[in-house]
Length: 240
Image (cartoon, rainbow, N blue to C red):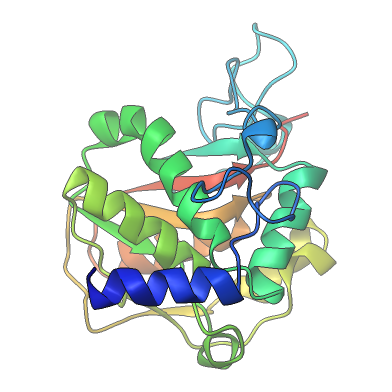
């Protein structure tokens, strides 16, 4: 048995993997999610907003309420899963409760359902939304980077983790209304050492609600000479 495999077995014995949906020890052993939980979260279906990808109530609508009123900086976006109570709790436990292993399952979800967008957008690089250095020290990992690397490995696309840097320490966006979110994130990003003026970039993040964060990231990249900026997130809110 290889040392890596042995270490993994010992780690699982001490800290058994938890299910990202029910948060109990995963059953069956060795899976990433409980068999009974696999159908409790389903991908976002059509109809979707043609700009941000939020689900729409009526098929005759082309854009969600937000995109009808506000012009975004990014070119097109999509989300894999609906941002409901189940996913909100799951991501909270992942990011603030030390459940980094949840991202193994969610990375697979991004790969499984993200291929359509990869084929259409043909990104030259995946750029995760960065954390401020204080957040990174406290959390120990960047969930967006973990998701981007899962996709990068699967699709053979380079991940430029330091193409963007977050210089400004901001308040949590979920605490703010739409206008305050845009003001809070304004000027938060700068280009980093991985900068390359590519024509097609895919931003990767965990949640899309108003689009303020990815708009600001796209603005920074476009000012630096990049072309089209697309967005793919694990979760996305409703468009109505």
